[in-house]
Amino acid sequence: MESIAIVGSILLAFSIDAWWEESKESKQHAVQLSLLEEEVLENIEQFRRSAKLNRQYAQNVSTLGDVLQGRT
Picture 1 (cartoon, rainbow, N blue to C red):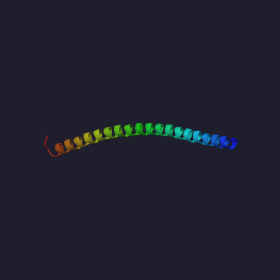
Picture 2 (cartoon, rainbow, N blue to C red):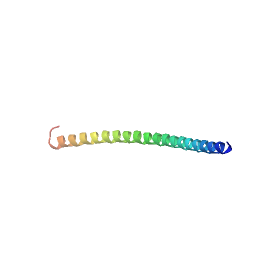
Picture 3 (tube, rainbow, N blue to C red):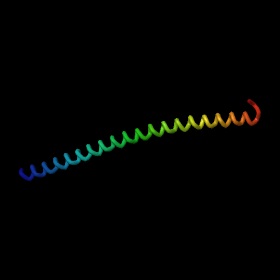
Picture 4 (cartoon, one colour):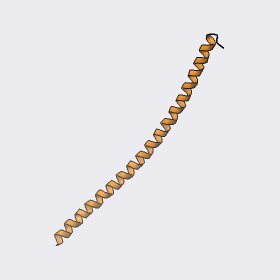
């Protein structure tokens, strides 16, 4: 009976340890996902700024082309 109690307590300890490790990994994944979300949102904002600048540049080039061709 005593050996069954010892084996049971060891298995319980292993189960608790495995649960604790999984809990820590889950928290780490949540932090990593949060950081990734921040980075993606920053990248989207940078893309929007770049796209706006590219549209302005294209408009300026088009206007310059019109001026050089005497259309304005």
